[in-house]
Amino acid sequence: MTCEYSTDSSVSGTIPIRVASATENHSIQFHQYHLEDMGRVRVRKFCELEDREIAQSEIGKGYEYAKDQVVAISDAELQDLPLPTAKAIEIQAFVPLESIDPIRIAEGYYLVPDGQVAAKPYKLLRQPLGRSSKVAIAKYAWSGRERLGLLRVRDGAIVLHAMCWPDEVRDPAAVDPPNETVSEEEIEQALALIDRMTQDDLEGSEFTDTYTDALAKIIEAKREGKPLPEAPEPEQPGKVLDLMAALNESVQQAKASRGEDADVHEMPKKKTAKKQPAKKATAKKTTKKTTARRSRSA
Image (cartoon, rainbow, N blue to C red; front, side, top):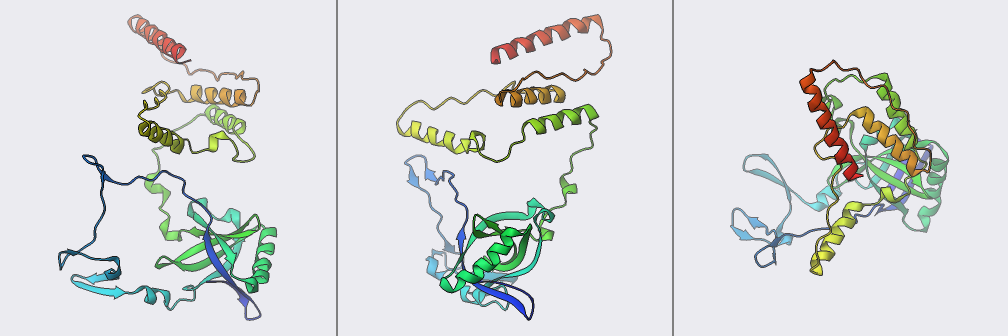
């Protein structure tokens, strides 16, 4: 494969490259088993017309454009598509990174120069791209379709990120939450939380995959016939927290974790209508129970 860019007939470049995955999946993978005897359950492929299992060598791609009318497409035909991007990553433009909505950016791949002949043109693209505040937008063919990509520099390597086409991003209006008003005090408190939780990088124990670690502990315990680790109890299950109280508590925790003074001035409580005497006793009782529950959880 090659990486190509040009502005006109006098300025152009072609770089022979190889594509290498830039990420790894460390999730624990499961297989399906028959629970009665733990025999492996596998998916077998049958031909509907001949009613028999067929080998992978007998299977190919096809497109059904009408009922009972299928056009077979071979891998060789897909490789020879009449597209300039079929065997090349073709750079279309350079744009500021901040102009790209992150929702459109997907998985990443390293572009590796293919041979010594590619070293200089690769470096000639990598160094100016790394010095600028822009990224390259390219088109390329991948997995049977033409895709849009973003090229950037990471620690001396060019990274290709797959991108969604504009019409592949759903309109947020389809999932817009119901209208709800918030006070300026609530917004200021939320901004204080953001300020307290701001850090310079993503280093730290809070950015580790605790789900995979917990799953590994369960597998190890079952393998050794030991009791399963107990799940931590959720805090105040089923209770809807007051937004202001939750934000205050979050700010306190963020400050305490940084060794700062955890004193936070509480926002003024909203005035409530007077209740009947009979309901006052009930309210006090409820408050007492809630306080006791919090003391036990603490």
